[in-house]
Every structure is written in structure tokens, then in C-alpha cells.
Length: 74
Image (tube, rainbow, N blue to C red):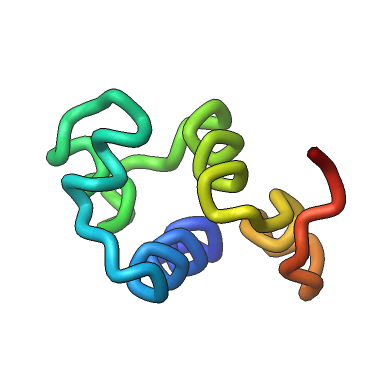
């Protein structure tokens, strides 16, 4: 599992959300989220951006570019 998938799974788990809940946030199917989380497909950029907004975290942190989790944009 790549860093993006690991961190987004971690965020989902911390919030107690299901893959179905994430799919609803992104307006996509549950199997798509499952494929992303299991590493069969990579998260598209638009989904990473939306999930960073949803969880209130830095995209740099999700992408593994920073260890600072706090979001610095609005």
C-alpha cells in the first residue's frame, strides 16, 4: 500500500467512517474506494484534494511530502 492510501485509510479509520461514507463524499462507487485503498488503483488527484478538504489535513502530509499534518490553506 502506498503512502497516500495508508494515510487516507488512517484518516477514515480515525473518523470511524466506512468506505461507503467516503464514496458518498466523493460521489463515486464503493468499489472504487476499495480499489484505491487496496492499491489496485491510485487515487486520482481530484479525490486526494477533496479528501484533504474533508479531513482538514495537508495534501503535503497525505502525499508523504511533509510530516506536518495540519492544513495550511482554506
